[in-house]
Image 1 (cartoon, rainbow, N blue to C red):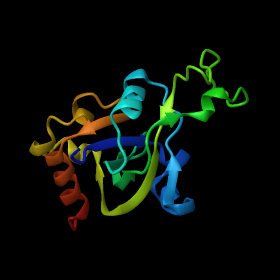
Image 2 (cartoon, rainbow, N blue to C red; image 1 turned 45 degrees about the horizontal axis):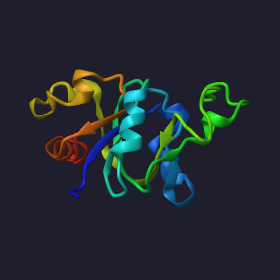
Image 3 (cartoon, one colour; image 1 turned 90 degrees about the vertical axis):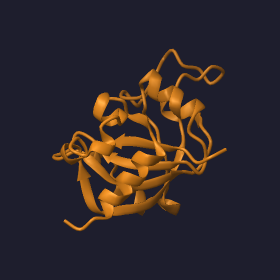
Length: 158
C-alpha cells in the first residue's frame, strides 16, 4: 500500500510539535478526537508509515510546524473511559464497543520555517487542500502533491 499523507491539528499550548519531539521515543498516542469524521479517518484510514503534517491550531498564527509519522495502528482512545477526564470521557462508550480511536505518532522534524494558514491560502498548489476548504476537521487527508508543496514551503528561507 502506498504511503498516504495527513494533516493533524493540535493546540500548541496543549501539545506542540516541540512536546512531541521531547516525548519518550519521540512518540505519543493521538487522543482526544471527538469528531466522527476525524475518528473514522483515524480508525479506518491512517496506517503505520503514513506522513503527518503537524498543524498548530488556535494559535497566533495557526499553521504547519513540521512533520510526524503514523507509528502504529488505530486503537481505542483510553480517555473515553476515564470519568475523571471531563473533556474526553464518553459515558456511552464501552470497552466492548469503543466509540473513539487514536493512533501513535512519532516526531520527524520541525520545519525550519513555520508555514501559516494565511500563507497556505495564497499558494495556488494548495487551493484544494481540505485545510483551506473545510479547516475545522482535526484530522484530514493531504495529497502527495500537497505534501511535497508543504515540505518545500517549510524548508524555504524567508
